[in-house]
Length: 372
Image 1: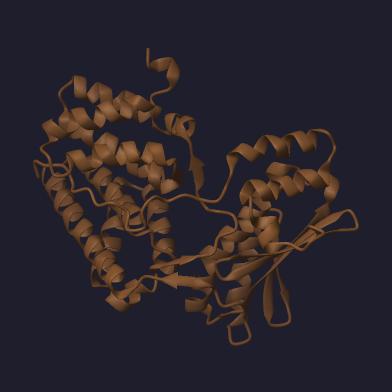
Image 2: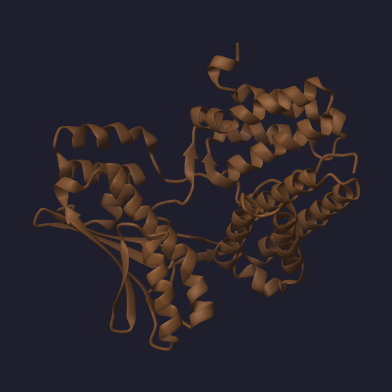
């Protein structure tokens, strides 16, 4: 336990979204000038510059945009924007518990869009006048629909026997890639639990929590799971960041997940290894300035630990920061290449050798005012 965890690169290579942040000023400018329709169309360009030509009609007033297991339909007519998306068929489902769950979702996480029942089908629905299509509001309306569909389609199929109305267009890993993902996940789990057990034996329970969280995010980064496995990782992460939960409960949430994943049959594991079409990505794009905002506090603490020659904590602080950045964002390639270079260079090195390299990397991302 005298060496830093092994670095494993993402099996999918550099992870980026279609969002073009350079187009946001055009969205805001059109809205401020009262050009509401233009602003909304520019918002679609911001989400995906090819969206209008790929998924829209020639008049740019009807769009059918695939996202995972749903298609988001957008219509602009009569000075209104209407957004609908067929979700799941519930003909064979136990209605009372399912509809109770739908009522809960319509309070949270959904705010403006709602899930409606029509016959045996559930659908997402939102409609508003074009002059109230404030860009931030409409972005989050679309994001809520996409995120909720992603999170609950697999859950509903397993718990309530629902059926997808539209079969998702996905690309599964081949057998070699699935085996590599399985091997990587098992290696991360074994290594993480070994560290956790060592820290617990020293009564370093806060460090146990850190390494378990790092391990969870390493799995997410390396294999980029989808479906039920992605949902489970997010649930465990929520449990581990719950301020009301005890440290023991947070650590046990991760330990229980790792134990479950170790015993999961390979075929079931492989079902969560695929790429799907994406409309609104669940993660944000992290530019240099975004990375600086996210990493600044970690950089200051890691630098202090290094000055105190606390190499273990300097390294853990940096690892936690980097994998949290990846967990929450699609990171700009130049930034991710720099971070991955440091992670690869320090892989399985002794704490005292790894810490200076990691800290020298993260301090590059301190807020500009603190780099003096």
